[in-house]
Image (cartoon, rainbow, N blue to C red; front, side, top):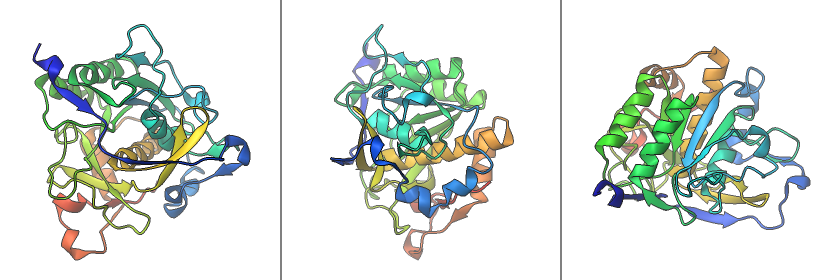
Length: 300
């Protein structure tokens, strides 16, 4: 019973809704897509054949930019109901990964990857570790190639650690947001676990964001400030946080798995990613605790 009282939820993040922007206004790329030349990678793959489980507040599977890539998911908050997102966070994460290249609205990093929406957090972004654990277990047993969690808790749990180990043992990559409490705060769970890939955030100027947590568990930095993506009702919003940098890295992993047409262990994925990184410009932060192995610069 104590387990059920252990809380987790969305890490603090900033949201700015973009009013007056609709999918019918034409297609646009976020700054991170242009800055990292993601369209060049699409000549080799767009993430075909890869399934990414998004454990979050659910997804708006009716959104013009998301519906084509939505698979059947699971709702652990509202038993028997579809995992619909009424918060916005889960849809934003899903859009960053796999918003469709459909000449409407925005485009995700891997626009032909498929999303498995798993609702483990409620409409306010809160939840308990038990539902998150159930989400990890269900994703691992229902075809996910990648699991992404842009959520956090100050403590972990034995069942969660076992669930992540189970995914890892089956070469399912688990990406987690490092946390947004700043450089004096430790990496949050589940990113703190050794079997996850912990992602921090940079801004458009390739600087480490002030909100990213620090610790030796940090693996990579990727774009996480002013990220434009989907929110429910065919809307769009800019959000900032490691919640946003994490799905960028997961989307890149989807391209890698699709390109090589095989699964990667966490160790293999990290070693491959380490071949394509860039140091922060500020020497003060060129340590494992502050930049991980560096800024992730996608290439195939």
